[in-house]
Image (cartoon, rainbow, N blue to C red; front, side):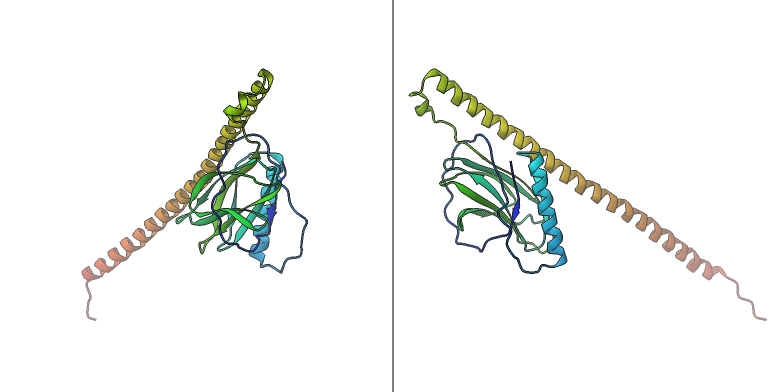
Amino acid sequence: MKIRAQDAPPSSPPLPDAPVAAPEAAAVISRPAARPTPKRRRGDARQRQMSVLVAATFLLVPARALFFKISPNARECFGVDAKSGDDIVFSFEAIGSDRSVRTSLSFKEQELYSEIKASGNQRITAAEDGQYRLCFKSLLSYVQTISFNVRAQKQETHPEELATLDDSKKLEALVAALEGKVQEISAQQSYATTREAVHRDTSETTNSRILWWTFLEVAVLVVLAGFQIYYLKSFFEVKQLV
């Protein structure tokens, strides 16, 4: 499986969702030829490096849930190669206070899916061979963490079609369907593991901040107590006239 981060295309009007089909087999995600882009700020360059790291990780571990950070109001896209009739299956979650992100799937500048939500799971059937683009656009003014998983898999054979096949074809279709289900379960487990890691990091960071805040409170209380003792002590001082 090959994956890569892509430059975001110009926005196009949203179209209705494509029909939903059943899950199955393999995905090939690739990076198109490089093209000249305008100069970016240092923060954008770091974000691009993060996307490349995400792509490299996906090369090593197929169907693995991944997560990356996206800059305020930025857009990041990933490409997945699919053949006509394949199902493009993806899930995502935006982690943050408002968790506001627009997720879209497009093909040849035509949007097949676009929605603003914190998390979701979608399955869309590819109408043509080619590369489909899964894009995330941040709608917040601060950095967000997005976890996602995407793959293309062959459609299952419908039960009415199985009735016309011989026994070997039936068995082959059933095995293929079982393989698709197993892959889907494995992807969901990886996705849950990634979410747990992100939430654990957030919890540890919060606990650390609370600990330091407690130390600060103790220091302020000690200083305040010392000031009160000094101030009250001044009332009991005996002043003598020489």
